[in-house]
Length: 284
Image (cartoon, rainbow, N blue to C red):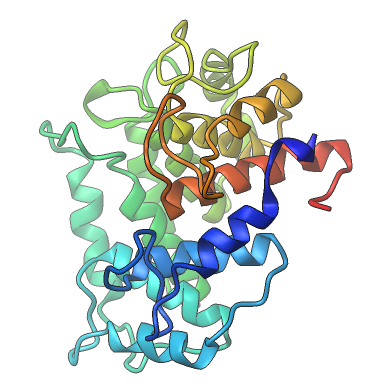
């Protein structure tokens, strides 16, 4: 089944988009950024490719942190620190402010106003908890767990203001598991995720609809992985994910058309990795 995916083209796609400063950008001839650098490093790790210009990459990542130790956002902090840890490096300044963000992030779950363009209101909480774990920083686990369970809907999904979202469900499950909550007890959540699994491959945003966007399939696959459940249609889903690869090697967000980007490429490869694992297959 791996003949469906052009692995060499993926590697070339990534390497061709590294800038002289060591950072990466999905769009050539634009400035390096933390997000694309994070995804580039993860993609190469999944494919067993050693990155080049590592010293320059480390220097670039460290340059992103501000003089007061902060970053522009939790996302940027996550991308930078997790990338540095991959090389056994740490940011130039301690992240003593990290826990300051948690109360506001938790409080935002109760807000009746959610930006419809926001992928998930739980994503930043997931990133903060994962980053805190990586840095051995304390987290008010009981409070986080209680607040996340408070946005669990009657159908088993997670999403504030009673809005079921597959992205929020994934991030909630990931956060709960990271905090040692027994996610296997969430049988109604598993049932809700299964409703989005398509017999012809992929996962949908809404039950009964045809799969369109790669992230829905990624969140569905990764949610089942967290719950230690197998995908029902692995071969069909593998073929579906393969449809997102563009001629330049990268993957796009929409099954119909679009430019390649690093996040979609990461989501595709991460999904494929899960799909192949229960079959005892590898990349090569």
